[in-house]
Length: 141
Image 1 (spheres, rainbow, N blue to C red):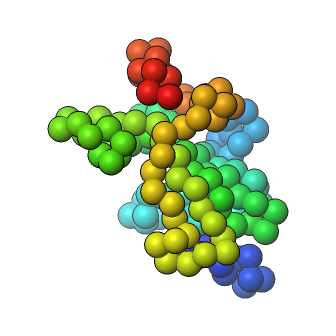
Image 2 (spheres, one colour):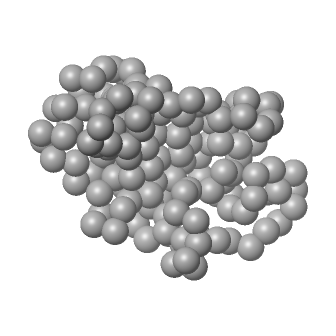
């Protein structure tokens, strides 16, 4: 789980994350180095998806990878001003699509709201979001 394209290109890189649990069969990862970046890896060594929780155990990020170990989807829960347009900067469930065939800014698509289908499919991972938070997020769909 190193830099983008290294593992997928057949270059073995040292692990930068450790598995600290599972949610519905998906590995929950945490950086081995507590001072390291807080995002999940851009490619997968051993799984089709990973989850990251914040320090309180609340859902923070989910990433899904294709058969070539490349990132294709991210769902996150944090402020995303271009979706909420609020001054309070409240967290919002949202998605980013990734196109492994593109590079630079074209690789990472702007944040978008989840679809109803995505919310239903992935809600099992939204641990420790309160009923009120989940209701509010579902109303945004």
